[in-house]
Amino acid sequence: MGLHFVLAPVHIVTMDMDTVYHAGQRLELTCRTITDLEYGDVFLEVRNQNFPASRETALRSMYASTRNEDCSVDFEWTYRSNFSLVPSMNGSIITCLASNKLLQQTSSDSKTVLILTTVKTEPRFSQ
Image 1 (spheres, rainbow, N blue to C red):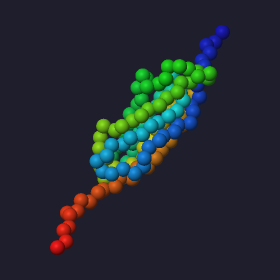
Image 2: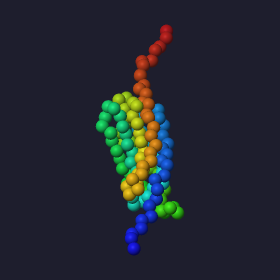
Image 3: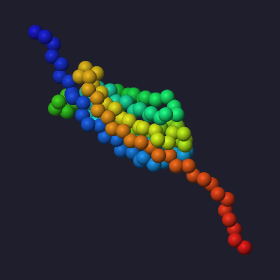
């Protein structure tokens, strides 16, 4: 008798976030998917031509503990960056990526960020 594993497949990833920010604001988003508790991983990745790519992995404590019929668990990550957005990050691609290591499957959702710079002008007074 061989071992049998019941693995949850990789499901669709959705990411809710604004795509237009002002310099100085923090990136905020919510990433949702359904994944395997033991073999599923969820990452948040930021890519930009001006910086090396950065990747943050979701903590296991963020996964729901109640299993669905296919042994999957619901996942929701409400993320707020610990850094302020700067103009050189304009055009960054933000990706939420879910994977299953054993099934070698991935699913992702990506959005491109536009960062506006606000030019401060001196007030004018008319006489």
